[in-house]
Image (cartoon, rainbow, N blue to C red; front, top):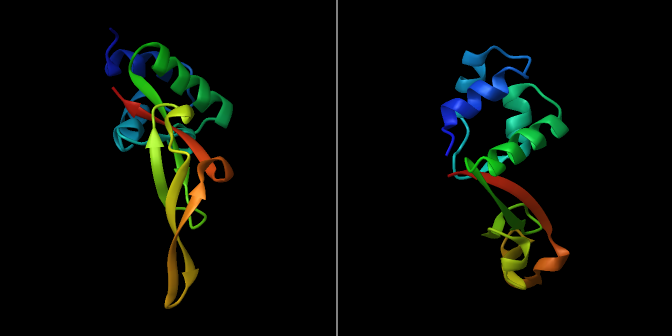
Length: 119
């Protein structure tokens, strides 16, 4: 199985940043929740290039892909390794000021975001 150092060395050849900056940028990411936008920003690449980098890391066994569902306020309600593993409904809080209540919302109606985890 390839190491993270080998992977970083490989991708640094295709990135505009010097290898030391790539390793530094990657090391600052949360290994449990690596978002595509964070990779794009840290490496100075396009969204499509960041996606290819992350998918390559998944194929090489360095990352695993996961998905999370967010409540309307943006808070994460649930996460799973696959979208089909998310619960059908999640609990969210809605309202303003002193009138806040807990509601059950259908996962299918909420925003989902892919993220990656360092294996």
